[in-house]
Amino acid sequence: MTDNSSAAGPSRRRFLAGGAGLVGGTLLGTRLLLAAPAHAAPFRNAPAVVHPKKQMHLAGTDGWVSMPANAPADPPFFPDSLAPAGGFNTYVFGFRDVTGMSATQVAAQRGKAQISAPMLSFDEEDDIYLTLTNLGLQQRPDLFDGHTLHWHGFVNAVPLFDGVPELSLAVPIGRDFTYFYRPHDAGTYMYHCHFEDVEHVQMGMTGMVFVRPTQNKTPLHAGERYAYNDGDGSTAYDREFAFMITELWSAAHYRDAHIQVNDWTDYDPSFWLLNGRAYPDTVAPNGNPTSTAAGRLQYQPISSQITCNVGDRVLLRMSSLGYQNHAMSVDNIDLTIVAKDASLLKGRDGTKNYITTNTVDVGPGESRDVIFVAPSPGTYLLYDRKYSYLENGGGPGYGGMLTKIIVGAPGTYAPQTVANA
Image (tube, rainbow, N blue to C red; front, side, top):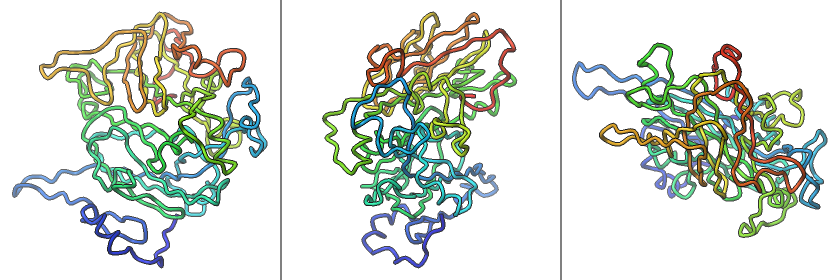
């Protein structure tokens, strides 16, 4: 979206508040135009360090998604009477990937929120320019909420780009802001809006970030990929699958759509989600959020089904931005936790502190990196050990945080090129 350059310039107070972070950049309207980082060599004749430049563009807005049909009605909260036709029943906020779109195309994404948000993947030492556009809320034009991007657990953020509006900037409706990051530490992170964060996180403004290690560029064995700079190949994997773990409280989503106020101390989730879906939708294929052919799951495009071949090393990235603790379990497969909260479980002396288990505890705001070796062919289940989280709004049959691990004979599945494929 093009910025309105005729808008009044920043006040002296606003300029001073962001002054330290504006060195090397220009403030124009509410868009920060960053100068290219200076790659000055510390010594004469020393080569300058060149950091690969990555650019992305996300848009924040609202929209409608679909919880499973086996969930019973819970009047007036579910299904929402304002929902459009097509199987949609739940109001949300979310982010969309609008990279490469024209200003007109970006504006057309208003009212088409996606949950979970697009998964982002970068390499260590990339220079990342991530633009956020706030398209406003189509269902709630009375609200003037800003949006931000906060990389949860990311230790390298400059305060201006940390996304906490009290310390940095929030993006108002109709404006853009470009964040800059240069990650130094591999791992599994997450991002969310930090403006009215209890509400905006619950409404769906959550996603995952993978920072890939420099060890990938000089693998210990040809063709290997790693989750971390482990030094010994212990985090090597063949396939990777990521899960954003959240809960959804239908009453809160209804109240936001119907201009009512929530009391968050009454938090009582109706659905338990993996990548914005509840079982059986978790095992549906990946979808295209820009195609109506995806049907009722158009705006929940990320599948949670795990497919692998016998003997494959499978990396599971688990992140939680819900408000409850979750114990993710698999029967008959050993799970090895290699990292917690984007930190490899190895001592300073190189001793591995990996944990072998069949249950991985993930608390609010936490992440886990888990590796397993695919066993004999068959179908296995990955599920929340708390059985009350395995239903949809109290309805019959299985639901909630449940997905399948499908193991095929060697060669059944082609090499994976992107996560969750």
